[in-house]
Every structure is written in structure tokens, then in C-alpha cells.
Image 1: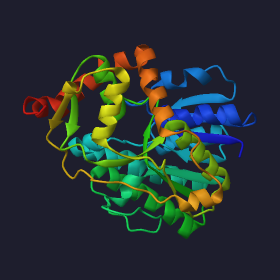
Image 2 (image 1 turned 30 degrees about the horizontal axis):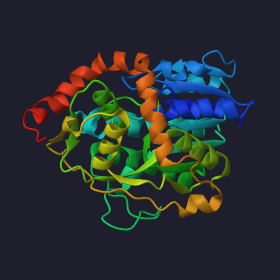
Image 3 (image 1 turned 120 degrees about the vertical axis):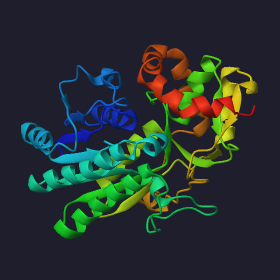
Amino acid sequence: MKNLLVTGGAGFIGSAFVRHILRTYPNYHVVVFDKLTYAGNLNNLKEVASDARYSFVQGDIADRHTVEQAVKDHQIDTIVNFAAESHVDRSILTPDAFIQTDVVGTYVLLEVGRQYGITRFHQVSTDEVYGTISSGSFKEGDALEPNSPYSAAKASGELMARAYYETYKMDVVITRGSNTFGPYHYPEKIMPLFITNAIDNQPLPVYGDGKQVRDWLYVDDHAMGIDFVLHHGQAGQVYNLGGGNERYNIDITHQILNRLGKPESLIRYVTDRPGHDRRYSLDCTKLHALGWKPAHTFESALQYTVQWYVDNEWWWRPIKDGEFKEYYQRQYAERLKTAQA
């Protein structure tokens, strides 16, 4: 590997991966390919903007011509695909965008990669493709039963990646990551939304009874896990990538309020989202046996994350004053009118 095309590299997890790769591998060149939708933000890459080994191309992964041009111009040998519409609530409101990016876009990347002899293609997926599990933990060979347009689109994308390995013998690996948190996270997701709302003494809209369970993974650990599979994973294989930190959403909410010294009266129980998965849990034995485990504890990573948002209003406040405001109104205004404290 020498020249990496990181699609969606201006997003939350993608930018963490880019920063990690440039810190870790002095001989690698990274080309970020990003459409810069609402969740793509070049401020996420300020740390590496002046690095001669970093380049940026604005483009849509569903646009084959632009993808081909980037691959040719930069002599790309490796593709890591983070590019995706990624928020369940938005997929319920506008599923068509998810099909276009997460399915059609992944196909375009695979086809261009096959045409130009890409050395390795890493498809970044999610634990949400499994659906919900009441007890035990999902293993890589378990059935995929996605319950939202987002998770169905991600499942479709990774199945296409698998097909390219089986049909064309393309060198493909897939990671299914658990819920990720950390700095530079667009504030539509539960942690950055609740942290920034609490800072401003605004209500924290908790879906249903708040007893949904998620396995939390710090973003730098997620980036390092993807790096590990990229370099050590076996072609054609899927790897669960989790943090081993299962928590109720309501417990996360309480921890955020406690760390900020804010009252629990800010909590509002609102109407649940349709098809809301009750519990995610990953069995990561396969990846641990290969030699990877998270480096950060949940408690230290959460504390750092909360403090980061306190210290970096320059990053998130313009976002919440922009496009996000209209989305928040659509998603929560009616729910908050009938919310229970």
C-alpha cells in the first residue's frame, strides 16, 4: 500500500482514520474523496491540511467519471470506503439518498477498483446490518436482518463487496463497527447532540424508555481497528469491530449530564423512532484472535469527548446554527411537545 483513496474522509470516522494513517505511516499518501454533504467537514482535517502527503478531491462516489479520475490522477492502489449516508432518523425521512450513496456508490467504487487493479478494497460497515438481538452477541456468519433504510443500504453495499470478492476475486475486507463516539461527531447522533444540548441547557430528547442498548467504541479505536484489518485482514472476510462497552441510552444520558454538572430535569422522553433496534452486541473474538483490541477505556474516552465539545464550540456551534436546525425541528419539534420529563 502506498496511495490510499479514503472516501468519506471528511466525515467523523473517516477523518479520524485519515489523521491516524498520516501519523502512523510516513510513506503513505492519502487522498480524501468526499462529497461534503452536511456531515462532511474540512474542519475535521485541519490537523493534516498542510501535510504534503494529503490531498483532497470533492466528488460523489456514485459519479464514476470523478472516481476514475481520482484513481488515475493519484495512482491509487487501495480504497477505504467510509462514504455513506449514515443516520437512521434521516434514512426514515429520505431513504432515496441512502440507496444512491450506500448502494450505488459502493458499486461504482468496486467497479472502478476492479478496472484499475486496486490492491485492497476495505468496506466500512456497521453492526446495524444484523438487526437487533435480545441476548448473546452477533458473530460474523449470522444472518443480516437490517431494520431501517440506513442499515439495509449498508447491508446491500457490503454484500456487493462480498460478491466482487467471490465473482472477480477482488481483494475485499469488511468491518462492521459498533456505535462510535468522540470529537468531530456531527451533532445529530445521541452523544454529540446530548452533550451540546446540555451545554446550552436545552432538552435531551430520549427515544422511548431509553433502554436501548448500544456497544460503544471510541473513534480513535475504530480508526486503529480499521487500519489493523486493512493491513492484516484476510481477503473476503468480515470482522466485527466493537468496543465491548454495552450501555443503555438512558445511562449514557445520565453520564453526560453528570460530567457537565447539568440537572436530570433536562431529560425528555419522546416518541420512539419507527423500527428502533432494541439491542446491538458484537462478538469480536475473530478480530481479537488476529491481534487487535481497543486501546481506550470507555470512561476516559467519554470524559475526553465531553470536554472536547466544551472546549471546541468553534466547531459545533456553526453546525447547529445551520442546516442542522431545520432537521432538528422536523425530527423533534412535535415529539418534544408531547414529551414526558
